[in-house]
Amino acid sequence: MSEQTVSPLAFPEPPLSDGVIMLRPWRREEDGVRYEAFTDPVIVETSWPWSEPPTPEKIASAFDRHERDRLAGHELNLAITDPDDAVLGSMCLYNLDRDHATASIGYWLTRAARGHGYATRALRLLGGWAMAELGLARLQLTCDPRNEASQRVAERCGFVREGLLRSQYAWKDGRRDTLVFSVLPGELV
Ligand SMILES: CC(C)(COP(=O)(O)OP(=O)(O)OC[C@H]1O[C@@H](n2cnc3c(N)ncnc32)[C@H](O)[C@@H]1OP(=O)(O)O)[C@@H](O)C(=O)NCCC(=O)NCCS
Image (tube, rainbow, N blue to C red; front, side, top):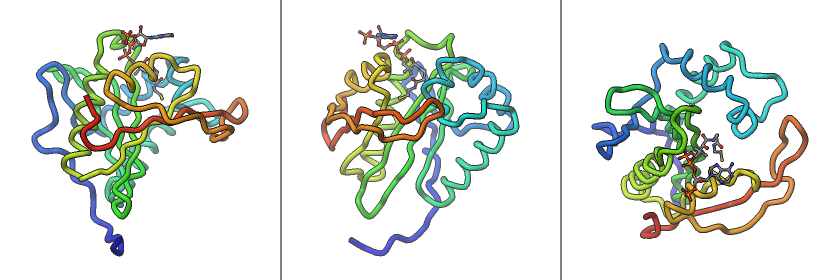
């Protein structure tokens, strides 16, 4: 293990694409698009742990937080778009730890974009890039045990279900258990 030096995490260039979806940096002027996504109760339920509801100001400050974490070298938050650059959702690599070669990954899709396999495509793209380019030894994904759609996406990409962490997160409606999945090199499909 070596001393960690802080270096910004560069956005993949050219942007990752499989011909159906693309992953590119979020833009400041898309704060409204992200706020709109967070008016969906499903996203608030699964991806917003705080008691206070999302507001445009909180969404704007989340953009700043993501950029700060990218510059600190441990996060990459990307928009999932269609070939015409319309936003379908979001895919985020976070908690990158270069000493241990580990990171976590998470995602959401706008309501209209669900049910087309876009999250699966995006997870393969960013997961594959992270394993190869960052030399990860382990990529982790966590989700609520009730979130069947997210578990299906993880399993379709080859993530292995490792177990249930009890009372892992402080959530607005009380503490939540979380399921833990991971892929190791060569396991992503
Ligand atoms: C999780 C999410 C990204 C999956 O999006 P998706 O790619 O459109 O996924 P699909 O709608 O195609 O569903 C994936 C699978 O789950 C199944 N599924 C979807 N909703 C389900 C539900 N409520 N109950 C059970 N199964 C469900 C689908 O039938 C599909 O199964 P298949 O693999 O056999 O085809 C999307 O549902 C979402 O944005 N949810 C809100 C945010 C979120 O949960 N993020 C993840 C936090 S861990």
